Image 1 (cartoon, rainbow, N blue to C red):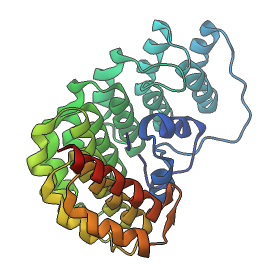
Image 2 (cartoon, rainbow, N blue to C red):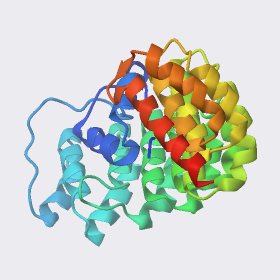
Image 3 (spheres, rainbow, N blue to C red):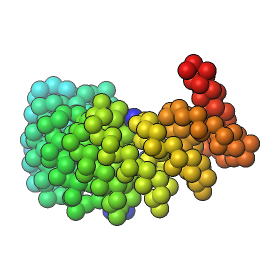
Length: 320
């Protein structure tokens, strides 16, 4: 599932924690590189602080006046799935330091091999109203990871958040949750002035369809077709991906036009989408791609991908 990030110039640097989230949540390292790092919190201190290993000492460290000690303890507790660790992380959502609240919110969604914590859903929903955008962003990410529909209404409200990063994370979380009732708003945020929001709105509409919220399709398709004309190539690419997943024949002609896009990743996505839709009208255009498009992406060569698409379309035609 494709799917986030915050804009680093607006909201801070990188962290090991969110590199883990990037792999687990978005599963799209290429997109993460294009849009920016997947981080909501501020860059932690470079001071070396060693976390204690036992749960009792970790819990005691949460009362340390040094915020870096508290942060290290929170990170260690994030890898501990005991009820005591979960309860402590929830308490830290109210820490006086917004950076600490942000770390706690991020850890509650699960990290590494440690699963998410369903009992944190309601506290994380409350954290969506935090005064700090870092905290709201991390809360949205974790709620997306937890995939609990109770968060849908609050996340929909976040689509109008003052922070573009929070809006983007909220959109992506709604797609992961499968909140079909958000489809109207997500079709609207495909026109957000910030590219980060438009990208994750396209991804979210794709994920809604994957999740079975197919009632969102009638609204999603026209909005995604329009997004194929977006000024940003990543938005166009993700719109093509979504249209391929939805497989609505209304997208065939716009996707055929996208085979001539200036950006190689958009053209590659259009080839894949046309294969997924399976309409034989795409065959002549795909033949043209085989002989004329020498573009190369990290996924492979476009002309080779078109050969595969043609073979699949021909197989489908012979079976009907």
